[in-house]
Amino acid sequence: MSLQDIQTRIAKAEADAGRAPGSVTLIAVSKVQPNARVQAVLDEGHRCFGENKVQEASGKWPEFRETYKGIDLHLIGPLQSNKTRAAMGLFNAIHTLDRPKLAKAIARIAQEEGQCPDLFVQVNTGEEDQKAGVLPTDADAFVAECVALDLPVKGLMCIPPVNEEPALHFALLAKIAARNGLSGLSMGMSSDFERAIALGATHIRVGSAIFGERVAG
Ligand SMILES: *Cc1c(COP(=O)(O)O)cnc(C)c1O
Image (cartoon, rainbow, N blue to C red; front, side, top):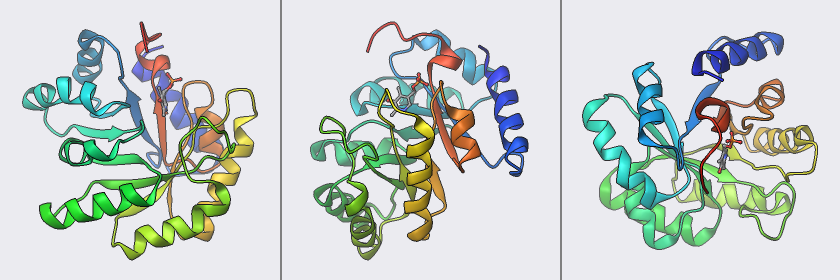
């Protein structure tokens, strides 16, 4: 499916939900995709991308940024504390803020550098052991802790369990965001982004539907 097809589907989902055109940001998830495919999407004029590994992103995006202006890069994978500074230097937004230690590290580096990426708190809506994110019951306290550290928390992010109806998780995430006064909702992937838009997603993370199947990873 082409980038244009996805944009058409987003526009239709926005209209169906009675939302303003352009209210949803498409993050093109380029992890493990060959550079030629990424470049083709850049050449079509798209500038917002997502990567799930700091190291992989460091290897390709500085060079793309020399050629293409205005690239908006989002980290959507887990962030190890020892890579915090590198991530903050590379990404415009981090969607995986999920623990106090990381919040404190980001706050300290933001003070030193005088800038900070936009932040999304990841919520483990399915309460899965193997998945990152704060539990729904801990979300309010953790958001408050981040706000107390002066962190620019823009919203919440979730990755629903694979075998469950994602809409339940999107609705839960929207409810937690609303009661915390957060407007950003990072939710929805290739298979379910229209449902996410219907439930208020502001940022959808779409990989394979744009670039084709990932070869590895
Ligand atoms: C890989 C990934 C995506 C994109 O998945 P697709 O199914 O290829 O659209 C979205 N979000 C996260 C967190 C991912 O790791």
